[in-house]
Length: 193
Image (cartoon, rainbow, N blue to C red):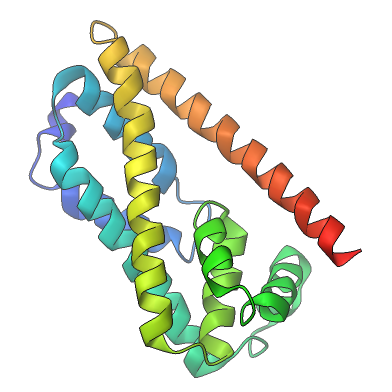
């Protein structure tokens, strides 16, 4: 992993992974960014000053592509948009995206299915690009800083054990994500009832 962390291909790969995660929630972009943050904190490589903007630009690029797809295609063109969790998330997002655009974009940045739903809904509902893009940029930057910082904190604390720092930082980031998802889900359920 240390060889990859110092490779010139690392940053383009991180960018591509984060962009891809906007569409394929099975891609582990958060996990990779946290792990690289831990490695940076333990070894100094990769450089957080490059990793954060690369991850943030990847996040914004992915969000923008979803937004543009929503603008062009709408929310019910394909079968996968009308079934299961995706359909439920799209429905919730569409009902509230115009009223609470900023809250949804910032919150959805941390919840994979919600991120897709909110970005597609924002595009489909006609939210102006000039309103969406600054919110997405701020959310993407916050997401990148948060994930790199969690990793870097563990990496700095466990410099002699970078693998343990990676494992612990990823576990903490996943746990915090699950807690946030549960809390947001419960708050949303209360508002809807």
